[in-house]
Amino acid sequence: MWFPVVMAVIFPATLILAADLPIFHKISVRNKCKLDFTMIVPTRGIFTMDPLAVKGEFIIYGDFNNVTAYASVGDTSECGLWEDVATGPCTTAVFTLNNGRSTGHIDLIPPRKYNHSLRMIMTNRVSKVACASSNCTTAFRKAGDKKGVEIEDPGDFTGIVLQFCY
Image 1 (cartoon, rainbow, N blue to C red):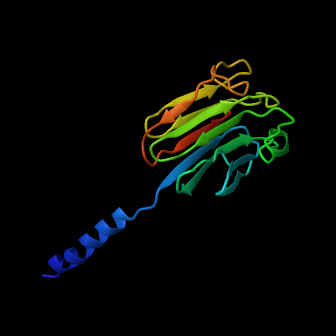
Image 2 (image 1 turned 90 degrees about the horizontal axis):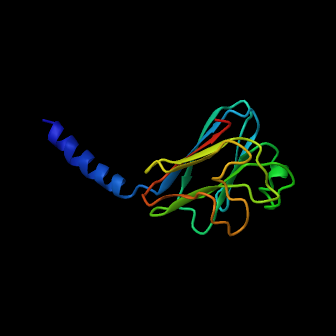
């Protein structure tokens, strides 16, 4: 007797909520380096993980419109994430997450240098790139470089997995 009344209220409410879901992107971090993890997403904030935390999940609401996120492990002052001027070794993940076009690549453009292995995986289409040694051929090594590998995902709600010291 009450079931039709309850369904008449719940079903339309569910449709309204589903239609108004915000755009979000999940960033999953796997850090086996036992070093601090830092990620900067302009207009969204600075995200960190304790060196003893192996796994972390970050949910970012909205697209990264005209901004690029940077993530690395180790000393953030050496990585140059704050001023984009590195002073020491730092394998850096660079990515954007936008519905319709998300991209990512590994940045070893000087003064950044290799310090830890890094694998990046887009979650929707499973596009991935990895750099496991200082002479990997997948990383970008100079500005305007076309020799590095850029991963891309044209889907909506794309997330990314960053694996350091995998």
